[in-house]
Length: 462
Image (cartoon, rainbow, N blue to C red; front, side):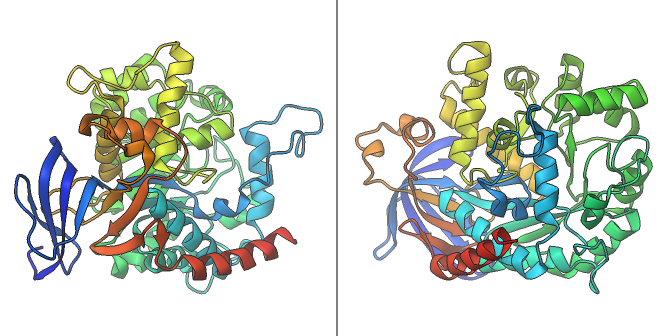
């Protein structure tokens, strides 16, 4: 940080860590870091002026390849006959689709996804990456081939990336052998460490590399410890946990403990951990998570699409827990929709309004955006999530001309942004000091979309 000035923007209203401030000058250097954030100032001649500026959101949970599956699993009974559809039946359809994707196609799918995420307000993504092998289950000549392809897509789109190579060794608790349809996912501890090592040269301002044991059913606690102990202490660790009631029952049958209890019994869970979903947790587990400083990684649109259930958000907030949001299977690419449905799910369950708030922040939109920023930045393991010197220059300019923002008091901007209508109010997006979206369009939108359509036609013809 501290290099020569690369760019600047004057915001009539900007959302800083301490809340909305007026007349804010933002400057960033050639490395893409904010160097100056000064409120109550005046614009210099020639400096671009924006009315409403927000820090860009972190997407803390993504399986990029699943973007190409969108809309293909919404047929009742396709995998079950007359039995009810569930997460487990959706998973079988996903397995069948995943085995056909080539590394080149994976890059094209990821680029489309990341461009969409940027247009809707995500400026960084945590990629929970588990398609490591070819369709027959063989390693590529370069073990990090597919992870490198996803990182190439991130560079093409301009989005920031935390790459999380996945440890995936077993089909169920008790180290059950993988099924044939899971062969593409297979990694052991040494495989993951080799991939992490291969990706090390790409770490920098826009890229971090962490680690993700897929779940307690797919990775043993001994394996998780082996990789976690070999990983530098500041790298993020993400894990799926307690997403499904069936998973909880399996864990209890195997260990006598529920998944979060079992994880905390056997791992040193702290603030570098992100517990993804954690949908089915009891009060003692909520307290464990909050006290450890781990982030709850929530994906409300995917959790709804798969029929998972609802995380106990109000109880977690009351316990001082940290949370963020991600688009997971990418049935939505919008942080607005994730945060809206995070709140709406709680309202439906509790039959009350305005759940996500605290005595210190009663505006639900402001609380959700700021809390998800903090949790997402923590989960990403990067200096993100705030308009403050030293953080990445990741910001959103809202469309001040849109009717939903017409005459809105500054305290109601985020309430309108999150809870009014379905239009995308994100006009411009700066990511790592580079403008990637202008006037609602990604700078490479047409080329990326053309390649994606071609790939989608190939995959859906199989």
